[in-house]
Length: 111
Image (cartoon, rainbow, N blue to C red; front, side, top):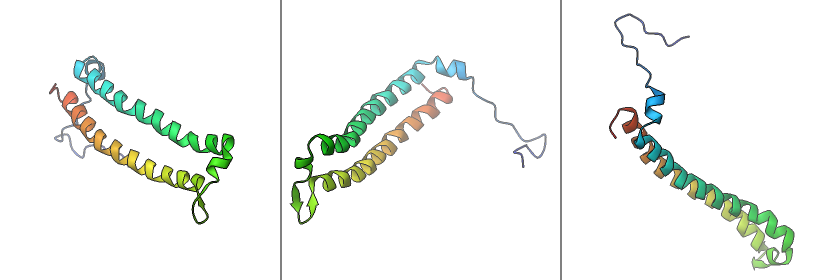
């Protein structure tokens, strides 16, 4: 199955001039805005994620410390990574909605 128009009277959407779009200041601003969020978020999350095996490897006594019953620091830290992933995803969705609007404005020439 192909997505071809059924008749000659239906308009075929034209592709934007990607070179021209990439040269617009609004497009460069959009890329900068994305990088200002994504790079620090990625660095933070990778440090947070890799902290668990590093802490367990180098400071096992601290990570074995009981917090509540049989629950220790390592278990709580591991559980917190699930919550952090959901928080990061939620923040990304909220911020990316603005990027989608800005990208549509750039494509339609509304700098």
